[in-house]
Length: 192
Image (tube, rainbow, N blue to C red; front, side):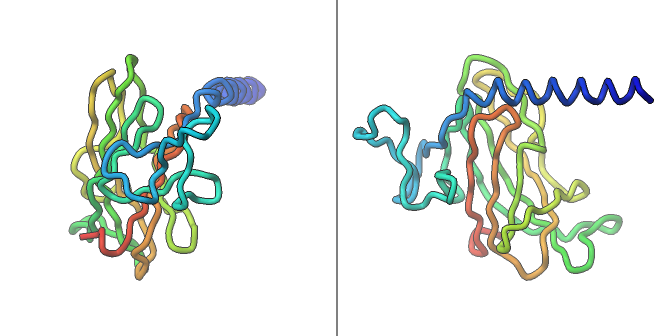
């Protein structure tokens, strides 16, 4: 038992050190294309402080982007292509009072080194700002998990169990190795 506690403590310390070391690489999200008036823009008068945030920012200064926009986040470009409802199949389906929201997203590694993308890098918040659980049994096309080589692109879907009757969400890509955070607004009109 003592060996298990020591091993757990070692894993925790290593993880904390990794987060601390990579936190220095944090960058603010920046719209690459399709940027609207609410997307962060490069401000020449910011005295070298980085990209200035527009009025569409959340309380933490993170830009909130729309579906279809491509966001540069460190060496990664993230795009949300679409969202749809999934009712499940004859074996698996949403619990009573829930529905499955499936989000189609793409990540491109524009850097010079490989990096990992995992499903824990993605979160979804509902209209009441509550985080939603992933629906691993939902029918998805591809997945958003694996090693992404330099210059490579990964596209797939990720599903979440959400309360019935809600149709406005924030989909967040926030990598464990901190490159910042990209927040995409998903509204009822975006979901097919």
